[in-house]
Image 1: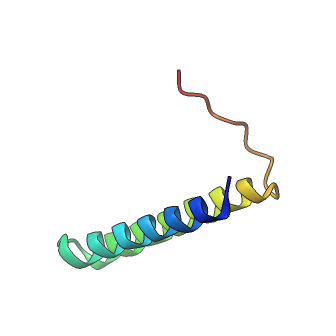
Image 2: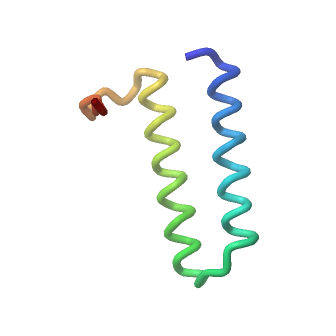
Length: 62
């Protein structure tokens, strides 16, 4: 995957998370859980792209 695609995807995820945190009213604890889940998913995604995390099998949507 080209580096520009990774950077664009990170920007989209960051802006989306910012907009959700800023404009959707929800409890602070739910926002914290949402932020942690998004950060963990993005980190796992980046590790898989870099080839450092091969423990998870690839999921196929057919």
